Image 1 (cartoon, protein in one colour):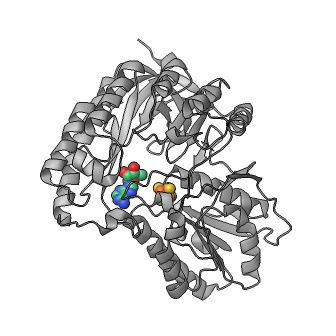
Image 2: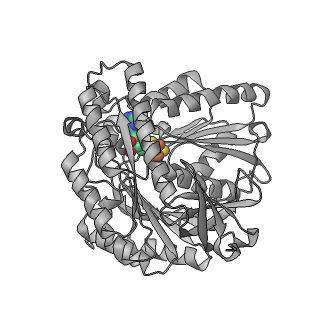
Image 3: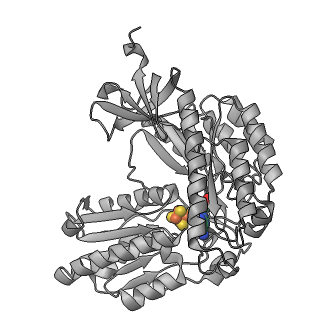
Length: 472
Ligand code: 5AD
Ligand code: SF4
């Protein structure tokens, strides 16, 4: 048993990052079994789940949609806010029930929650029917853990400190049109509210050549779009001997000529002019930046440990808008950080008005055990925080709608991804600026970038018509 330890996870040693080959799976006995995988959280977790699925499929298993049909259940969990925890523990209730009827079903809990001491202690004490707990640093060992669990051993293996980057990982990708590509793992920023630097470890960049190779191979397979992934993509390269930075990587990926390149997430702190130039220069780098603001109050930004002021954020925002034609910018905002006053909140609203974001993810502060902000005095009642969130969302939604309405009557490029959920006659896709569009087009257009005339705008989506089929 190897338990997580947040103090260990906080350490940033100078230990050299090891670049390793992903171990291959040896003969295990899961042929023709069914697995049920549920993923919580961000794109990083979604992409990790593609690795988990590849491992399960390589063992001879196939996916099932119903929990009750599964021989193996894997939950890939998120730790970012308390409600993510609640969802997982709620779901475990159903699994406990199932295990009473079918004790032979194997249950594995992975992801960010497994990196937390309190969670793992609770799993061991209150959920002994869970067979395997594995962390974010040892996904590649899942096949071995499953084998051991078959032999009735409970496996709890979580590493708190990790300096490895595994290459040539197999993924069962969810799409054959768009793909995620990791460029940097971990985070060293330690914003005071955030659990990620503890659950994901220190910043480790992949080698530029490996990233380019992966993108080239995806392009050869017909992929139209890659999204470069990192908790903070700007930090890319600082740990590499070659001295690359994110702009070098972006440029190298742009030169592969894959049709569309995106990247998430960017920190406003070290977003260089060179990055802005490269984004502006290459047509296949999409004009879309997710730039978390978190708060518009200098006092709160300082308490959050964000390393920029309101003025610096606004100056960067302005530069992006001026230099990158047609750029769309979205953001993340937290309300109700400990000690946030009405005045601080009004500063946030002021920045939202100044920026008129294309969209935003908004959250109420959630204390995460082990982070500095969880110990700060927080006297604002929840109702007041909810009221702030409501006011913020009203503003955010009105700006989203405004941006969408501006597109009505315009022709925009849309990458079509599949049948629309709302209407089978429509396909859905995304504009270069990452706006969701429902388009009347034949299914043979799935996987293509087509010109679409925008006919209608809602707060969160657009309707459009394929340009060739437009009759004037
Ligand atoms: N409480 C609320 N929101 C949080 N986020 C990160 N940590 C917390 C927390 N403790 C938000 C931030 C981040 C996004 C992914 O989640 O806005 O950018
Ligand atoms: Fe992703 Fe953060 Fe959730 Fe981990 S805690 S899954 S990194 S959102």
